[in-house]
Length: 481
Image 1 (cartoon, rainbow, N blue to C red):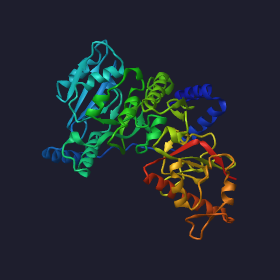
Image 2 (cartoon, rainbow, N blue to C red):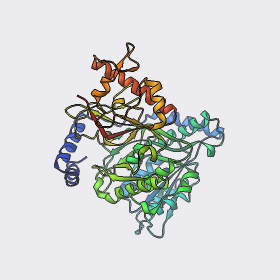
Image 3 (spheres, rainbow, N blue to C red):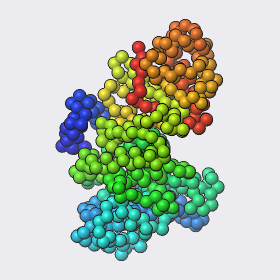
Image 4 (cartoon, rainbow, N blue to C red):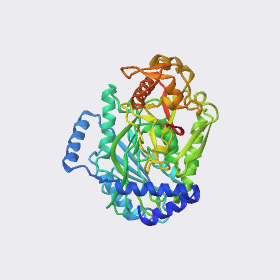
C-alpha cells in the first residue's frame, strides 16, 4: 500500500471512529508491515506440465468439467484487459470458456477482445446496447455460458495459471468420494480459493488472504469468500445477480449460493491476484462506500428472508459488519448451540476464549485496540471449534449434555455476576485433570487453566456432535485477574 493511500485511510478512519481508534489501527498496520513476509511463488513449469497431462487423462475418461468464466467489462484500460485475458489463456487446464460482456460506450474494449476471439474460440464476446450496471451486465454474460461451473473474474484482475486445474481437481475429488457419475450431480455448490493483492504493474504481491474454511457467521461479518469464486452452473443461473445490490452483488450472490444443500469447498491456495490501483476498492475501500452500504443491506435482507430477526450494523473498518439478534440468539438461530466471548487480562490483552480443536488459543496476546490484522478477524463474530467455560452461554437443550460431559450444573458465565473467581470456588480439577468436580478448593491456577480449556473443548465438541454451531462473539468479554 502506498503512503498516500495509507494516509487517506487513516484520516477517513479517524473521522468515523475517533483519533484514539485510528492511532491503534495505524499502529497495528505498521507493525504488521514490519513483520509480514510474503512472496507469491507461482507454480513451476514442471507442475503445470503435469497438470496438463492429468487433464488429458480426465478428458479421455469423459469426466473433465467445463468451467466458464464470466467477466463484465466497462472501459477497461487495455493494459489490464490484456493481462486478464492472457491469465486465462495461460491456464494449465484448457477446458474453459471465457465470456466477456462489454458495456463500454466508446468501443475501446471491443477491438481488443475481438483480436482474441479470432484466435481462440473459447473466448465469447457480447457488446451490450447499454450499461445496465454490473449485475445486469454479468447476467448477460451468464446467458452465454455452457460450463458445468461458472467462475467470477473482475476485468482488471488475474488468475494464477493453475487456478482452473485446482477447481477441476476439487470437483473430481468430490465426485470420486461420493460415487457421483455425472458432473451435473456433483454435490459442491460453491468453491473458493485464497487470494492476494498486487500493484498495478503486477510486480509486487502482498496481503495474502489465507481464508477460513466455510464459516457461516464469519461470512455474515464480511465477504471473506470474495475471489476466486466458482459456483455450480444451475445454482448461479437460478439465483443470478440482483441489481439492487450493485457494488456488493457478489456478496449477495455468495450468501444465497451458500445457503442450501451441498458442500462449500475452500482451496487453501492463492489462485487470484486482486489488482490495486488508485480507483480500486482493494487499494482504497472508501472509494466505493456505496458498495459497503450494499453489503450491509445484503446481510440484512438475507437474514430477513430466512426469518431471522436481527439488526446489522457497521463495524469501524468499512465492509465489516456485526449482527445483533432482536430476540435471544437461541430463539433466533436454531443452529447455534453455544456462544462464548473473549478472556482478557488486566492490561486488556486477549488471553483466551476462542480455541481450535487441538487447544490453540486464537488471537492469543492480541493488544487492546487491535483488530487482528488487515482482515480484522479478532473483532468479528465467527463459528469456531470451542469457546471457554468461563465466558460461555448455551441453549437450554444442551444443559443435560453440559452436566454429562463436565459433571457440574450449567451456569451462564457471560453474566457479570458469574465471575472467574466464583467459578473457581465451586470447581476443582481431578488428579487426571480432565473433569471438573463441584464444591472443592482449588490451588493451582495454571493447572486449572489448561484443564478448563480441555474441558471447554470437550463440551463444545459434544455440542458440535449434536449438530450445533459454536459461535464466538468478541464483544462479549470477561476479565481474568
